[in-house]
Image 1 (cartoon, one colour):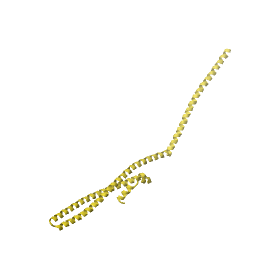
Image 2 (tube, one colour):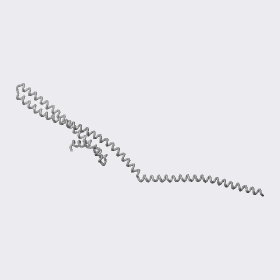
Image 3 (cartoon, one colour):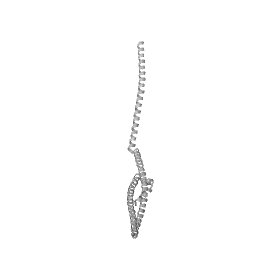
Image 4 (spheres, one colour):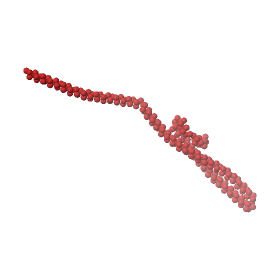
Length: 221
């Protein structure tokens, strides 16, 4: 495939369509960018060669034009000296050179047309390349974000983490039970202390009553 066919294919390609069909968009965009960069280098190198060729042809055309002018001057000199035969021969040489000039000018026109086309296509390729690079940054960021989300998702569903969370819940329940037992014990102790006070009062009242009965019994004697 020639460089011009490659250039045309790339310019006419739809990057979005390529990425939609790709199993690995990040890898595909890298390949597309590499292809574009390599093609751009080749096209610019080819453009430089065309420009160099144009300069060579331009110099050659100027030289031919000077030669044609010289033969015209010689023809004038020959006529001034009465040498019509030499003048005719000089004009014949001028005509031959002018034919070469015409061919050279036609080649230059073709080179100018080629350069204009290359310049336009280079601009289009550069625009495509800039678009691809921008998409590459977006794709890389989206890929990293997606991978991070997948890692988090895998971690959330990881057995060891689930097991650890189950243990946390188990220990929380145990702590709740211990705290409940402590609260219950405290309440029981508070109730028991209050009951003891009432028991002491009842016992004291019984002792006081028994004491009074003893006093009465002694007095009766």
